[in-house]
Length: 638
Ligand code: NAP
Image (tube, rainbow, N blue to C red; front, top):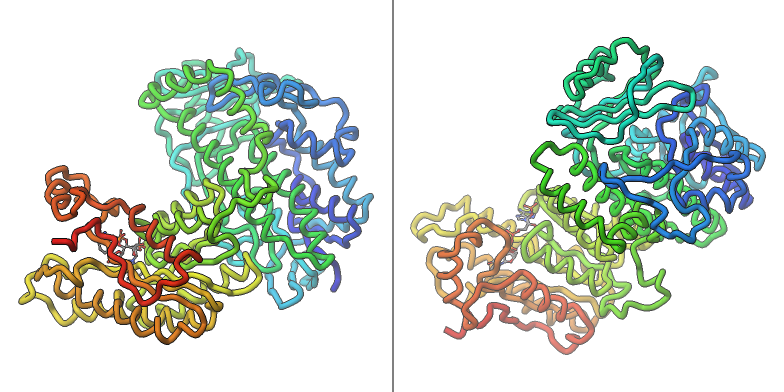
């Protein structure tokens, strides 16, 4: 190995990490595309938690006395950040130009032994079982560096993220804010001043130049850096003032983008800072989030180098913190960039922010003082989930019954693979909902019913499990995905193609999923197949669909016998009409008619079914196998 860790990117995040790793005795090489440090100070605000991080590392002393950043804001509504914890030694926010922070962090990293190589670009990345190989290009030509781990701290357009194949789901910006540093202006300072046509901010830097920021309501992102006349025009449109006499020293635009790597770790490659998450730069949270990623990663990487791989914990905790921060940034973006239509929301928010508890809560969230979302580990207690330490696959869990089941199993402590066919956004939403509640999940895509379907599913599943748990044990399989293509067709009208497709998705795929899972299921594993009350309730228009569900029930019967010697239970759950969020459940008359079928005179909720699945997945159901569990609210009572 040439080095222990390659850090890609010599911004504040990479340099803090490099210093921490060297302080722990690791050999570190930092590679940076830029030949000289940047002269731009994009981010300049440090929050209390970050100040703690810097103080603990003796970096704060080197930065000199930092001026207070004054009060903060939440989406443009004034918010005193000292309320996060008035007793905190660094209560509030602090101004520190990014250039200064970078210089000091680089000095520290180099003093501690890091090799910082500038003008060196990462061009390829290969991972082996026990090391990674980074290929770089520079004036000296191409080189290879071998290392135990490689970390991408290379910002929002991260090459590491792309080269290592990290998923980066989310949304691109839909709205744009323009900003510039301008000399020679004499305009009054203002903070998020709202005008009928937009929003304007101006403040004077200590060197006499002025930072202007302007958003024209509804303005969408442009594909290039704005020029000064464009900013002058936007400023005039919003404020009526003419700033054409100034000379810009820096021009930039940003938007309300939100993306987050699906995982911060792929094998021996990790992400930290903006490489892992892209967000609107509001209130300086992005830089603080990134520095806190680095601070958390250093210790875990040193442990991994020492033979204790706890990197899954870095992934879980920082992903959850990132998701939460991105959500609050998105809320702020809505409040800030929304036009007149968000005024009622702003008024309501402003009203809520008169309460101390609300101000304290928001201030803690921004300052990073609310800590990571609580996990059982952090609380030092066991959450007593019935499925703690288990892993589960729920097919078709992007929505409907599958989503509720994934959530329910995660609530009980299982790590859940959220499978979907095409609806990536919905699958990511399921994962986000689980993480918001402190659970663990990841999304896996594979269309079922097409050649190679189950193979594709298991490739993603096994990789996701391996990254998070170190192996591919799969304790629980829920065959839930299903299609109803020929529903509502008279038996006379069903075509062979429709029947083939239904069987391929609803019966063939579950069979081969079970077959393929056999080698991953441990003794005591669980298989739950979702059928339908329609196998016992005649409805001629659903004959084709019901035939496939009849087939699913045969998987239960025969595999229950086959797998009993291993203590694996196999059961069927049969829902009746269940609200899966589809539009028909918004029509009161339709819901009323459907309700009459159940003995309880209501349609089922996805959670009603999910609770039954969770029971069958738990140890409480160890004596139940080969059964047909009616979860139809008594629809089959007749
Ligand atoms: P849903 O809301 O229609 O969601 C279907 C799920 O399955 C989605 O996650 C979808 O993924 C996935 N899926 C569909 N076709 C797929 C394919 N070809 N390959 C891979 N994934 C596919 O479903 P639901 O109503 O909750 O039903 C769940 C299960 O319960 C089904 O087996 C259904 O037959 C059964 N069931 C439902 C009811 C009911 O009233 N809802 C009643 C009895 C039985 P994408 O989001 O990516 O499309």
